[in-house]
Image 1 (cartoon, rainbow, N blue to C red):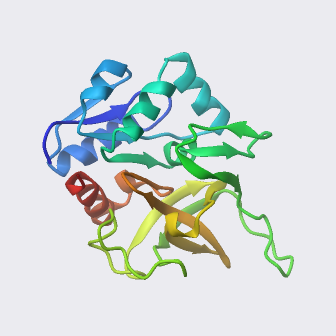
Image 2: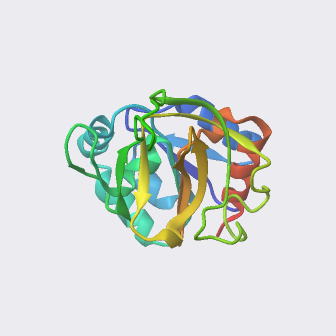
Amino acid sequence: MSGFVAVVDYGIGNLLSVRRALERCGAGVQVTGDPALIAQASHLVLPGVGAFADGMLGLSERGLVEPLQAFARGGRPFLGICLGMQLMFDSSTEHGELPGLGLVPGRVVAIPAADSGGARRKIPHIGWGYLRLPRSRGDWQGSMLASLEPDRRSVYFVHSFHALPASPEDLLAVCDYAGCDVTAAFARGNLCGCQFHPEKSGETGLAVLSEFLSLQ
């Protein structure tokens, strides 16, 4: 890794924890909402917690939508975390159909509140879950999950919605939540995202961030 990691500050997100986790992995970090500084970064992290509409409003009000789209087009590694991952998709159904950054084809939808037999699920999904390979993928080589073994490492989730990539090939990992495969991570070219919080997932989360920092 060379250069520095820009962690995007748009008024939403656990910025201090994300910064500390990246620094523990050896990264030089700039927490910033400055488009000029974002453009200079070698890697970019878009964190976030809360509602999709609030996230897009925060990016729009700070003039960050186009700079993030330009960074994505530039081919450098771009990681979205939790809400930040959801914002990378075309749209969300949270509180109506809302447009996202349009970096990844697909939609953000609610986790089903009941299974096929009518049994209720607790929403939001809060807690630890194991990362699993989806049927569309044979391994995690070359991705931010490359150092992990499927079904062996658990990570921490807090969410009510999850992203559904339009292309099955973009789905990197899933997590079984009460019989429902929720999207845990995606990867598409230089873009990747995790619905879980690596900064709250102990050594496993640090391993994920370290792999992301090694991507070129």
